[in-house]
Image 1 (cartoon, rainbow, N blue to C red):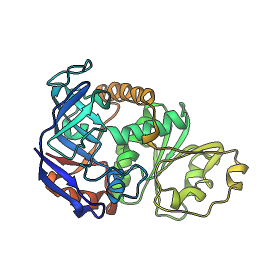
Image 2: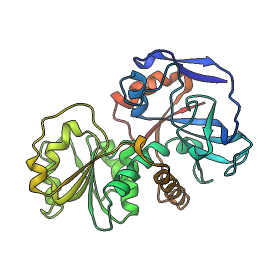
Image 3: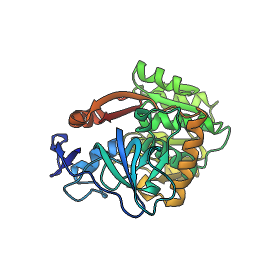
Length: 320
């Protein structure tokens, strides 16, 4: 089979397509024929080798993918050959024609969701669900601000928050991005390149401020988030690309809570909860994965440049 192999950490160009043996499942393992693989910013961080969870070399990148079950080990009980699935991590990496997974790493993919959409399910929808529900504990009527709402995680967060009955405020910088956030269901959209957008968001809430902020770029926004955060507000740090100087009194003044989170730290029980919620809301159409750009497997380096350097709307996927 064809697979991307990384033999040294570094720039996107270290990813090369190679011919490798197709793995065989044993025990509770499942072999999935990958039709599409999701490209996420975390994939690029892992590739550099400086991430806390950087894999040992050589390895095949990719945690997200979608396809059909090709073969199962003798102890598998929750799926069978031919089932449509999406992956939530894998044993061998999803940037490949086939991926070996433990059965608990798979979620069922409803018939109304195609494989390219399914490849964009796990990381964005699980990350945003964990941030909104398992960390911030959002409830109906909450004012929820989602920074960078036009990206993969941001789009998913807008949809989840609307499912919960929240008043959703998104930010984006381009006209196309703002239109996408509106189409995803946001009640209001602001331009985060506008120096005064924090005050504009506070005014939108009638001056009381937002209850929850999903923060995608904490090194840029975290200190200024308090300009529009309400009393006893919660900030969940989902993304960060640097350091910042922070004034703790800002949190003290508003009795605020700042949560850090990583999907890597979720328990299996929490992941099982997320899988159930994803399936139910995909099936009834409340969640609508949006794929903005597609690359072939041998274009993986270009996809990694794209996901970091450009303002993607929704998800980028690799087709196999």
